[in-house]
Image 1 (cartoon, rainbow, N blue to C red):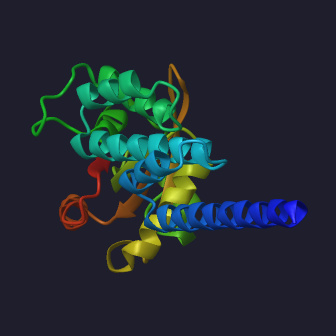
Image 2 (cartoon, one colour):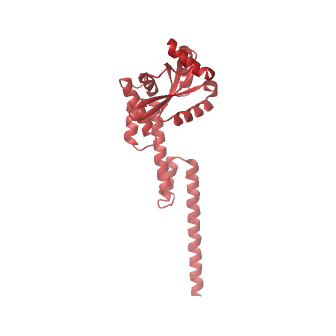
Image 3 (cartoon, rainbow, N blue to C red):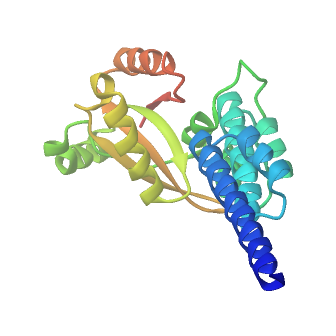
Length: 232
């Protein structure tokens, strides 16, 4: 009889343990599906000793970093990037922020928010690229020779400056797929430059004239994209 009672207690405790695990698993799936800092924080409050606690904390930190980076990129000022680095010195975006800060420094002055050129514009102003290709891919090499011999100027729109060519290429694939009406027919150029932090690759597309560059930039800025007309 006593053994029977012990068995019943063990069964009840086991059932309660399984129910607790099931509840925790359900809560983790809900938090992961929501994928917000608030959802992960609620999970941690309910299950502070969960095996998923470290993953939840890491995700909260990553969400905060991504949010702060988006804010810095939207402001696109040296102060904004410096503040981001101060808050997230080990972030995956920290190197990109340092490059853009150096772009501002190379341009000669930190811009006032809302008035000055973007970091991408500063990069373009600071760089002295060799005569580059024309907008048309079929005539790129021939046009480069013509530019060198005649001094002819060509017009581009710069879409950003990145710490690697692969990152610039990835950005182009994303932008051209997301905004095909504005970009799909254009040819990308990945123009190398240098900064104290290492190489910089400027993503540019060629257009026919200065007015075309300004028009394209105006349309892209309606989508909250960073861009600047460049003559090379």
